Image (cartoon, rainbow, N blue to C red; front, side):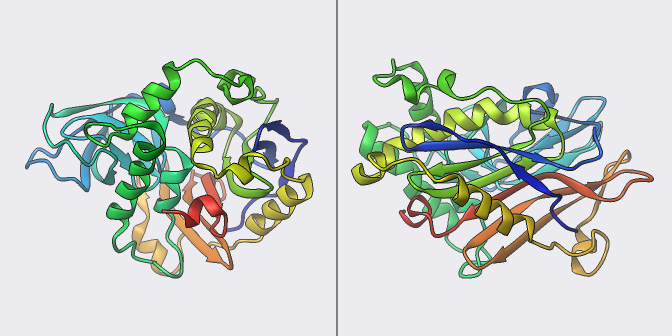
Amino acid sequence: MNVPQLHVGAGTVLGPLSIFPVWTAGTGELGISTGTHADVAVTELASGPQVAKLTVTNNGARAALLLEGELLEGGQQHRTCARDVVLGPGETREIDTYCVEAGRWEGSHSHRRQARRAPLNVRSELVATLADPGGAGRQGRIWNRVSRFDTVRGHSATSSLLEHMDRFTSEPRRDSRFDADAAPAPLEGQRGVVIGLGTRPLLLEVFGTHTLFRRHYRQLVESVLLDLELLPPHVMASGPMPAQRARDFAAVVQALEFGAFDGGLPALEIRNHGVLLSRNIAHTTGSVAAAGIAVALPQRKPELAHLTGWNTKHPLMEIA
């Protein structure tokens, strides 16, 4: 499987944050709901709560997509999805999660879904790299990254990422550039973005359709704005990321090859959701690590539903 042709448009600068729109060649609708439009219930395991697992059920009539880094709020503690997940209509399964609230283990059986995403500082730990393919110690590193917000924003009684995000959202912005309303609106047909922090690219995120992208765009921008508080002064004062760096980064991601959808070991991980098949994909080359999920519909070639490519050499990923 290859990444479809990526086209990077003109960027918008919000202080040290640069946002470049991305378009892709694609076949159209995938028949997937996502974000707040997906009717997905989330609960602790019936056999008893576990930090690294939750139960999800798709109560909708269409397949549903949950994203890596999506926040599952409440329950015994706040969690985040470890990787992309597709659920068929009526499907229930256990998913892998990580805790983003180290100081609480009590509460209700059920979780809320507001389709919010963890800041990139936290999401970056979900990427498997050549140096750490199994993610050993990842939960501890995620807690460390959440605690960085305690350091710069003040104490949270339970070291809760959600508390920091709620505080940030309710606070008046001293600089209008750092408000989600200042971000560019999604453009016609846009399917993704390249995000630069300082003068270097950090992330390319792309979806299989414009609708899937639009369901998550605002939440992505809101989470990235919180990341700005972790940047050192020299990065905050740096100029915008050059457009050529956004295009060069997109070219590296586009060149990634994920193998045949139904060939080799990945075939063992294909899930049948009735209306479609899915499997998670991942690849690392040099300083770029990418992960996402691909789907196959009847009489259509397999295609990407979601893909995130990371610059693992960006300072925000290296600081923990």
